[in-house]
Length: 135
Image (cartoon, rainbow, N blue to C red; front, side, top):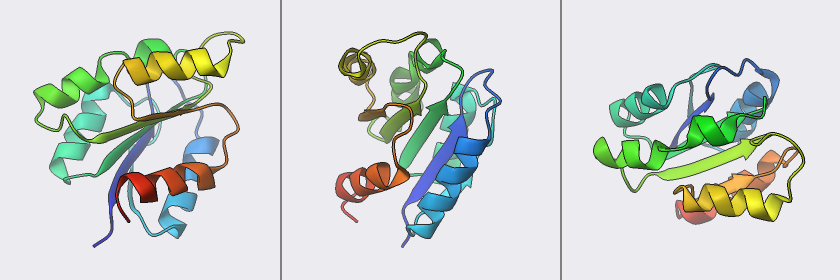
């Protein structure tokens, strides 16, 4: 049984190239990918995850407002009954140059299981997914 991933680009972000790369990489790695595309709301991620009994939600953002767009997603997952779903986030997720250790800590504190800086190789996330999902 393939593990199911919900992927998409959050908020008002329309950057589609990275999303397509992740879709291809995760599919090639054996995951079932439900790609919501760009400009995805938190509610859309959650509805899709509930509907297809997803194993993880992978949020990407490139336009820098990920921190605002991503705040509260874990709590909304809990309200929807999927509070323990894996939450990953990656890309250009904050405005300006900030040490990634600080950025990562803020996202982990928001309830994300993993956070990735811009330019992270998809293989890194695939390795973490396999470990975190016991694949």
